[in-house]
Amino acid sequence: MGLSHRPVRIALIRHGESEANLDKTIYERIPDHTVPLTALGHEQAAKAGRELRELFENEPVRVYVSPYLRARQTLDSLGLDDLIGVPREEPRLREQDWANLQDTADIERQEELRDSFGHFFYRFTHGESGSDVYDRVSTFLETMHRDFETPDAARNVLLVSHGLTMRLFCMRWFHWSVRFFESLRNPANAETRVLLRQPDFRYKLDRPFDQWTTYEPTEPERSAWL
Image (cartoon, rainbow, N blue to C red; front, side, top):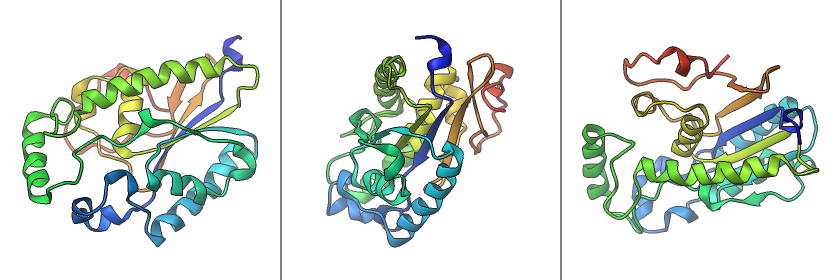
């Protein structure tokens, strides 16, 4: 297949507001992967779905979704079932593993350590580092590129995932430095970023991620967005 067969758009969306966004102690009682959306989270997803439908021009969409409940509920609330067909559940797009049932005080202490150690390399005691997520996102990209070459490849691709995973997907895709990644904020709940195919068949982001530090991206890093 030629480059022209690759998707026109690759959209990334973070799940809507979850119960854990309101109360972190919920992780002490139920597993991270079973945390549901709030009512507002469903509303956020529905609004994002209307915007994505317009972006996708009512054309078919190939979907990869994190197996976490809040991501699957976000996908359901997008209201795009008529465009999607059968979504593919993709464990490599899951949230960063922090622990099993979490001790809130311990996690808060580790978050402070992570801020000084570095978000990319710090590994939670019973979980993953950002670099671990980067590695599994890299293997997912190999799968996704193979899917691009199938005869039934869609012009639109949608990844329903998590904030850190979205940032690391873009870091891997655009070959951003660790320092640039460290400066980026997570997108808000149900916020999107879209990789748009250009006339030269390269992709550019529709807009950059917000930054929380004064790191100045290099020219190659800035070239990743329109």
